[in-house]
Image 1 (tube, rainbow, N blue to C red):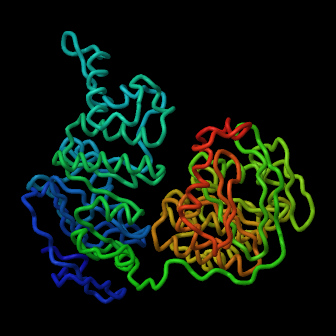
Image 2: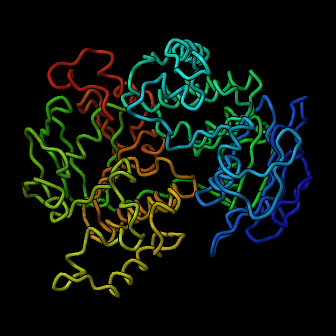
Image 3: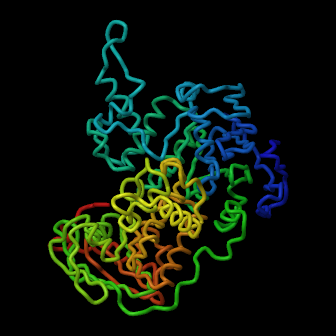
Length: 550
């Protein structure tokens, strides 16, 4: 039995209890029976330290053939570092790695791949200008002719079709289509097909369903189950805990770089129990109480329309209120919010703030009007990844922090530290944003607009891709801002999130608002019927033209 960061991993009965932070002892349920599954990879007491940070503190892990092993924990728990160790991208400072019973020392990702370990990172490694065929055989190109000097398109196509057929035909992937034109789910399939072609016995998947719709995620989980039946060892990393419980045979929980528990999935009685292991404290409730002081109307839109995107969208938000916006991917929710913020032009419609109709020709006008927008893709549109956390926090407000064209450094640092403290930011504010966890990145995006004191805040998928502990903090911040009188618009694809955070909800489908509900009227079936409205009855006009846009 492994030692985990100085903590003993001890067997106990079926009841699990999360250990208090810093107690020095970790508990886990008794190890599930092997069931004949061979240990493919064993990591023992892996340690990895960076300046000022212990990323892994004696972590041990076993991956077995024919199982899905989930790795869970908050952002910064050490999951990414462990994945990099297994992929050969990072060498541990101390510890031992065995592959098929033999100790190995990876000098790079090529060594890991040679031993049959393929990692599918959250940022997909697909070459957009190459075809599906060329991406799948990349690094394993079939050749013909003397000395195998000529690339065989015929053999490559045959291999590709065989790999895609093995993964099911539901994705409808054209083998010669440029990979850059495919959906995220289809690109995931390309990565998996490449792993199949390499006959990889070990597949590491980092957040494979984070950017997928529910239907695409279900299809991918079906493929993962199929790979398990074929005897592959799969390490599955996801923040979607219900999904983890449905797919995993065993789970390993990390917290602060330490191993907290490794247990059979059947020993987890509820998602809340798993959350407690991850965060190290009881969670009496995931969602804070809603603000109960609702004021007058602060913000409204009337008849917003944009060709091929949305038509006749109207809603209002009051001071202290959180308005939820529900709908399927492609319903037009993000397009509406981008247009309100001035990123995309409107064909017609009116935007009203504090009783006055305002003109927004671009984001600068929106910011001046006191409207903030937290975009769906924080990395592409919400942050400058090469700048520090401090610089990102004050970036949208340099006019307030500048004199004669020079930024007042001391004032910027003081405000950045103050906001970071309010947000519970954990990390180095002077480090490049690209080096910090997703949850802390999201806090910086929110913090940028806290600095602005904007009275209207639009949150577009604020909890996508962050762990459960960070989600709780985001919910707390939303309600704190509402309690201060802000009017908040919350766009989310997680229905339970909308139903527990918002005071009122509109449901979009096919570019139109199909229903509006107060909190006491929330009914999952009614919301889903409205969300599917455009797909059941054929809409007309611009709504009919609205395609499957994000």
